[in-house]
Image 1: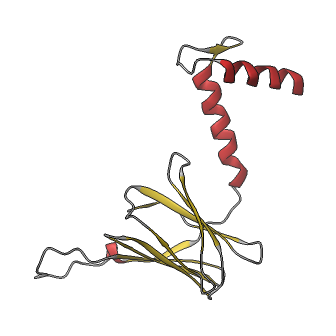
Image 2: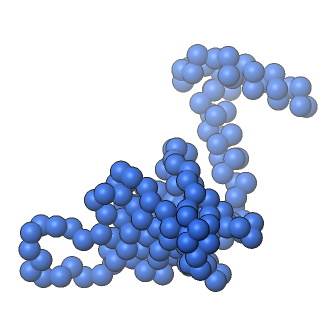
Image 3: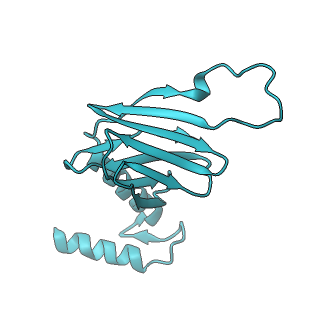
Length: 153
């Protein structure tokens, strides 16, 4: 079975990437989509951090002058850990509380993203400003992981 799978994989990777390409009569695009769907199930049992505050849900102040949009504040919680974010025109600021060094993976819907480490106080910054759907995965020192739901910035 493993040899058959490896042969199919080799044929798929050797293809030209067009939608018409097939492997054993199956469209290559369908094989790739099935693989991606199966891969996404590997983390199905992860608990998402709960979004407990989003400043975008607050009513706008009447009479704000200058056309300046204030930064958006988001707070996620999971267990005893809190992730505070500020998304502004210059970038994304974040901090894990209680303060601790963490590895942060900022992920876009296509799987692209950035990986960075916070400082010893759990603070990190992503520049330039982000737009579109993103989620964060923060690897904590105790081997636990805090994962946010998708947020549209």
